[in-house]
Image (cartoon, rainbow, N blue to C red; front, top):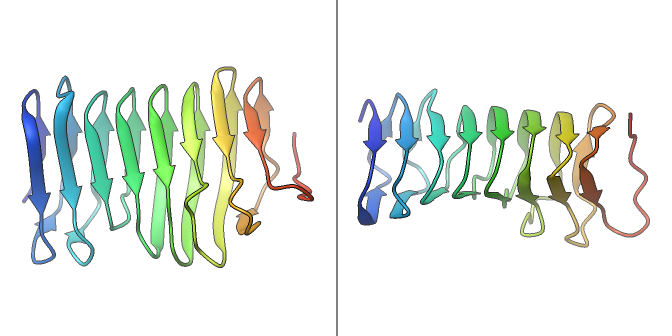
Length: 166
């Protein structure tokens, strides 16, 4: 599959473990649609743009730009270069050594409460007013490489955590 472009619709598009997605995944104006990418599918340099609907992905994504809707990342490892959230909810439920290079939030909710990874890394994070990050899962398993840039956003951390804020 080169590109998945959903501009409306309902139901579920299921990308099974024998499939490869090499290009863009665009979900625009499709509130009733879910795209589900199964574990062991090949997702190569996939850039996601979503404003509605649900994207459930068990493999890492390269770049996510979210204007609304739900993105649920359940990948076990790999690197996601950039997640930019204007609105909507991202459930970051990694289960192994995943890396997120840049998280930029202008609004929305980045939910790491379901992350079961022993350790995962977020290199750069900037949270503007209206943005909320919740990492409270009791594991204290997020490594923030650089200080979190709080520009009016909110981060909720596990009790006893020490985070660098700039």
